[in-house]
Amino acid sequence: MRPRTDASPTGQRAAALAAGDARSLAAALAIAPADPAGVHEARKSVRRLRSLLALGRRTLGKDAVDAIDHELRVLARDLSALRDGQVVYDTARQLAADTTDADEHATWHALLPLLAERHRQRLADVLGEDPGFVRRQAQAHRQAEQLQRLPWHRLHGRDLRQALARSMQRQMRAQATALASGSVDDLHAWRRRSRRLRMQLTALRKLHVRPHLGGQATLHLRQVSRLVDQLGVLQDLALLSDALDALEHARRKPRPTDLRRARTPSPIQPLA
Image (cartoon, rainbow, N blue to C red; front, side, top):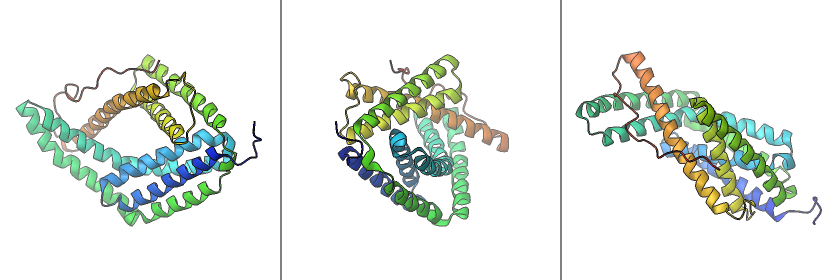
């Protein structure tokens, strides 16, 4: 067994992966003010970086990793409201296209401009505070420099496997809690844990590290991805329901009779 001080090819690949995601984050933030896809891509880059850092936290240094992760978490929270607004509008537009009820169709089309304006106003507020996302772009470049200074050469495959095992345990606990309670908050926590697990499995594949999941890594990744997508449909509908409640309260606009009929997810399949 090589000593822990040896430069690790796995660590070198992880450093390159982190650097690539940091570049993707900065590029996405540059286009985000004009293109909703930029916000989506920025959030994905943040989640990939946080998932990778979580895998290497014990080896790379908890204090250094936690400091970077905190900044990434704040950035993700800032972007969430913008992305959620776009998701709400897109979900409503899809439901309007899918409904066969004339009254419900008319209600959706009355609501769509209000949802779009709500999203535009939120973007205007954010851009007023940070024009062109210049501050956020600068923050992304600082984080890229901080990532480069981490001791990636110490990171070995066994470190990643151990961290993945802990991540799987956390996902299973979140799953058990959500299935027992059925609460929206617990369902969201289940989705977040599942999504991180999916990203970590994907990261290990890119790093050429076998996760030792009984020889069925591909099957597990497929299962996790399906679960995340199923839980994502529920979260999109919950976001839309909250937005409709807000509009109903503020403008006394009627809401569609039943969100449950449309975009019903396939039966959720928990991980075994």
